[in-house]
Length: 270
Image 1 (tube, rainbow, N blue to C red):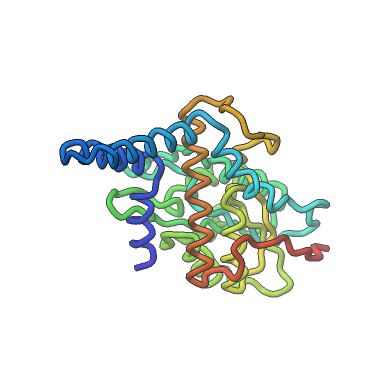
Image 2: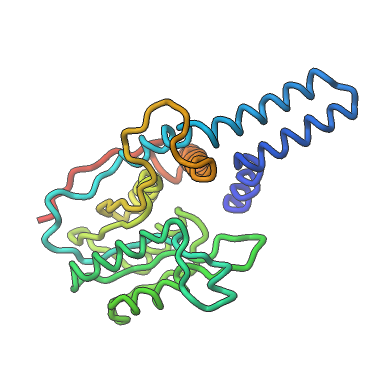
């Protein structure tokens, strides 16, 4: 129920969809003779469009998320396992064509392959089913083994979790599959903007992980200004950042994480 409600709510609040809803409401108000209400809805739509597409609004929202966790320094001398969260493949295309086409978060799998070479004794757990409700798509757990094996990761190192639909289920099902011990070191690979929510959830289910963020979307030095990216990139950053902040709030209110914005916990990796 939580997953379904979140998908429906996000369908309404996603910036581009919300802009369309506001414009439709403005047009409807015109036909009903509600001129002032029509102007209000129209102005709100234009303001939201301008913020998301032509300013650094999205980058500014994303910066604190990406800066929350850094990769360990020094690097751990030993790693028992690597968990990579789904979201890096074009699920609908791969279902239709049978390949392993990477999406905008495909860095997760490139980084995982690099880590697998650096730590050849570590298991590699891929966590990600298809979270789509209305469209058929291949889950990342279904596609990732083909790519990772092609990049040199031995199949006997792979643990595949292909049932999760969201971050909370990623953590739950991964813990059940990996059965991590207290003295083991597991790296968690996901997009930097998604790492705070992922870390909070993994901690909540009792799966201690070491954050290994990747797929950065900002330089970390953006300021309040007109966008320097093209409008599509700015809109994507705004969409991802708004979704992640809403996700953090929803998970915190639902008790899926005990902190709205988890902090870095120092842990001996020797």
